Length: 169
Image (tube, rainbow, N blue to C red):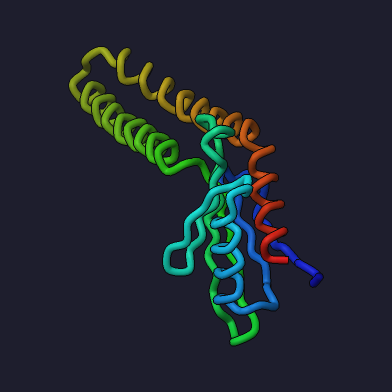
């Protein structure tokens, strides 16, 4: 059993990242994960694509906020490698969140232009001002919804992390 030193980013991020220096080759780590995914009794499902490992919760335990763990293994030498991990929501949830963020951002810019135009033309500015106040509040609400989702999936994140540590150790 080797000592695993893990470097993590801040807890502020909705998609936590970490790195681990490994004393094993990339091929060995990929083989360990491949063997683990082939087992019938494994708690977590996964796939391996070009050195990238995607680990997800089984269908029976999955819910809307269930996380997935994306691992990338970078070969440093023949006998050592660097594992980079990224926790995140399922791709469908992440795409929805990014789409809503994009719509809010573009709408904010649009209402900013509308506000400027209405001010220049001395027209009523009620709608653009209301929207320029409402949209940042909605954006903040969206951030906190993401935090709630992250905390809802925290136990599964810890399970994914423990599974990864068990396989690489």
